[in-house]
Image 1 (cartoon, one colour):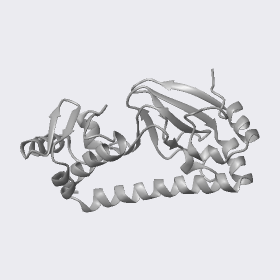
Image 2 (cartoon, helix red, strand yellow; image 1 turned 120 degrees about the horizontal axis):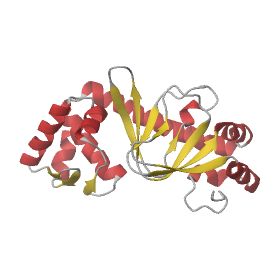
Image 3 (cartoon, one colour; image 1 turned 60 degrees about the vertical axis):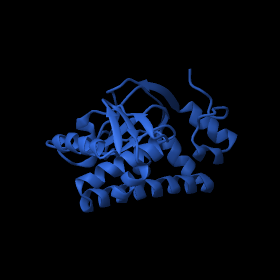
Image 4 (cartoon, helix red, strand yellow; image 1 turned 90 degrees about the horizontal axis):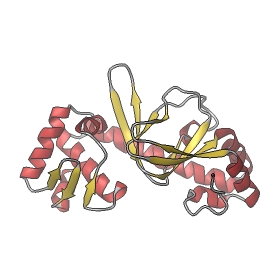
Length: 222
């Protein structure tokens, strides 16, 4: 059963600017869906019919061609996926895949577009969300084009600690291949650098569990 947006404690802060009638309209045009680990939430080049709000879980946002897959970001709770295609693009220019069980609200994109047109406060919050997305993308481009592979890995681990898991100790639902795709390096380099970082006392690694032992030194590598 779908939760009414008007009483949902997990709703996006963007929706706090909506009237009761607008919240009701969103509720009537959304579905709550559980995606299992590995399932596709959004498929690149598919017709853009919905935006997706993540209620729980982690998803990887990635772009791919015939030979390469690049992970742009790891999206977690309260992330909104698909707002970059609002009002101008008929197809998604990225894919999103569940990295663990992910609960999302799938909202009709036409309903959101209509509310943007008629609610200035809501359109402003959406613009802010877009600005954050652009900032993240620019940071990603700079990191991949200007930083060496040690700095890229250090920045990823610090980002996991500060933003994704908000802890110095965390377990990532990612393979070494995923880590290679998000840092744009070979899997062999990922394995080597993690061993180097562990040997230098920056981190402790046990499979997919990471513990940052020396945050300050790791941050300087960024």
